[in-house]
Structure formats: structure tokens, C-alpha cells
Image 1 (cartoon, helix red, strand yellow):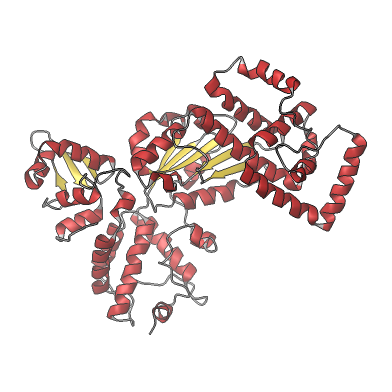
Image 2 (tube, rainbow, N blue to C red):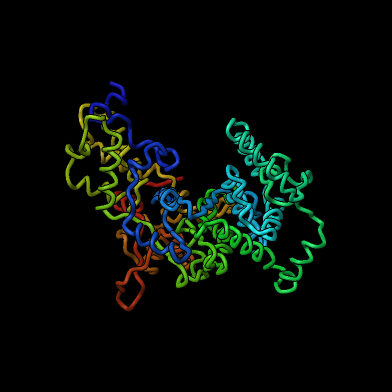
Length: 493
């Protein structure tokens, strides 16, 4: 029997536990996605303010962003989704940040109007002059090429060719004085947005007017923010009532090498900028990994926006699992497959405890459970023996650097998650004090530093209970580390 025949014998048409990202399951997204409990609260808050959504890796931040984009994609909303940051240098100032946002807005706006350029005629002459400036000055080279391809496809269609021909004839009759621009943008795009006047990069009249309105009234580092607000006002005049900017996957930028402190340093100017997070012209929705956010949370004005944490309780995890199983089942199956029929309640509880309220970790554990059961006996759904083996594999094989990264420039002998785990494994109980850790692990004068580092990365947490004498009690927060400690399992990189 092959592994494919094994899971098909259990009623599954496709295997549901080998894909771990929302992007890879785009074809199944609507069928398997389960909204988190605070979904409606976040969505309601976005009507009036910006939002920061924090969560561990694998808790569904990207899935939630995809869902919100689908819900909010209406003719009245302009949505910009930012997931690539290579054009924003690591040590940027606020002026460059505002320009970065503005370039994405300009790109989305003109892409939206590419198939209906005549709609720009609704603007006044002065506004069309401004739009011309934004088109030429803030449309990046790569976006320009994409837009050129889109425009070309539009113009190559028969109906569009006839329509554009009539449109251009009408434009000629109006003789608005348009000229072909050759310095900044391709002729194709310029002609397509022919309602816009030619952009004179050195036009004394145009920049003199802007200098009077802005440069004498604003500090240099707020220069680009004025343009950002100006363009948002122009967007509103196009008929959009809301502008949303979704920011996700900052931690996946390869320049950070998974260094949480570097990620937090890059993210801090965005998460702490009140102009971006409290603007009445647009709403920013920032999805962030909780570990780097812990380093900067004291700089974020959380009272002025909607701050939400993503996590899943046992009941929600069971629902999302049932929905996933049903979606991957054979067409004849109309109820979720019972994959826990041949194991004890204790093992089911263990699975849901070990996944640490994280759907992605749940899929990893179940994948290993199916693999182990296939090796033991492919004529059964996972048994206690298979689950025990799967949990041990999960604890040992887990890449702890993914959740608890070390600094990219750390020395070989510096402390990292695996060294912290070795210290914690010397304990006999998940709850401990600094003194207890020092006694069993011999951490000496470095004990306080170790505890602070482990707490910042989320490996341990303070609890309300106090030790004799009022000492603070800490608890190992990661169930994998607790399991390794209690079962004497060695965890090594």
C-alpha cells in the first residue's frame, strides 16, 4: 500500500497535512478558512481606525489579511497590499517611509484606472496636473512595466481599440494641449491616460505653486507626507470612500536573516508612526509576528488604534480541523472524517496541547501521526502508539530558531534558544524562580539576563502566583519545551 492509498482508504481525496501556508492553498482557501473569534471585532474597528494584528507564526495572520482584502474589495474601497520591502532601505527615515507608501498607492490607483482612463476626466484641470505629477514621479520602474503590459492588453482588444480610437479622436477635438511624454514614462501609458496633461518636471509654474503651499510650511522630513495626504485626497475624489493599506510579511524579508531584533528595528518606524496609524484619509492594517513586536510594544500608541492578538483555543482548533478534513475528503463524504477513533482521549488532548494554540503546528503533528501510523499499520487511523512517536518527533525535529531566532551576527558561543532549553531542561517543574534556575543550571550572575531574554522571546512568562518571600515565579510557555523537560528528551540544533 502506498501512502496515497493509505489516506484515501480513510476517506481523504487529498492529503490535508502537507501544506502549511495560505498562499499554497489558494484553491481551497474559502473552503478551509475559519474566521478567528475576534474577526468581526477587527473588521468593525477598521471602519474607523487602523489596526495592528499580532500573532505567532502559523496562527493565520496572512490568511486573515487575504480574507479582509476579499471582504473589503468593493468599488468604494481602494486596497493596497504590501508584502515586499526590498526597495525600502534598512535604515530609512520617515520621509522615505512616506514615499514608499505613496509609491504603492500611486501604483494601485493607476492600475485600477488603466481599463477606464476616461474616468480621470472628472477631475478638475488643477487635479489632473497633480495626478500627472504623481504618475511620473512616483510610479516605479517595475510597476511601470506591469502597467504598460496591462495597458497594451487592453488596447489590443477589438472593442477597446475602437473605443480608444473614438476617445482619442474626441480628445483631439477638445485639443486640451496634451503632448507625448518621453522622459519619465513610456508613450503607451502616457497616451492611455491622455486625460492628464503633460508633466513638466522643471515647470516653474507647477513647482512654484507647490513650494508656496508646502515647502514653506512643513519640515523637510514631513515633505513626502504632504504628498501622501494630497494623493489620498485625490483618490477620494475618484469615488473611493475608504483607503486601506495592508502590510504583511515584514519578518520574511531575507535581509533580516530571521533576526527578531533587526525585524523589530525595521518595523518600529511604521508601528510607532501616529501619522500612518491615525490618519483620517487612510487606514493602515499591520500584521506582525509577536516576537519582534515584543521589543517595540512600549513605543506603540495602542490606545489610538485597534490592537489584536491572534490565537486559537481548543474549540476553534477542533472546528478548523473538521472544516479542513471535510474540504479534503472524498466527494461522497458529507461529515468530517473521524481521525481520532482509534486513539485515547488522553492522546487527543496531548495533540491539542502540544500545538500551542497554533493551527500550523497542529498540521505538523497530525502529518507526523499519519506517517507513523502508516509505518506501524496502514489499516488504521492514528493510534496512541503513532501519536506518541509523532509527538516525540515533533519536539525533537522542530526548528526552534523559526519561533525563537538568534541574532544574525551572533557568535558561535553566544546564548540562543537551544542553550536556553538546555538550562530549562535541568528543572523538575515548568514553574520556577530565578534562584531555582540558578541552583539547577548554574547560571550564576547571568541568570537575570537569561530570564529577561527568554521572557522577551516568549519562551517563558511571568505568572500571578508568587513564591515564598514574594519572589516572581516564571513558567515555561512552550509546551514542546515542557514535554522535553518532563520526558528527558534532548533537544539540539
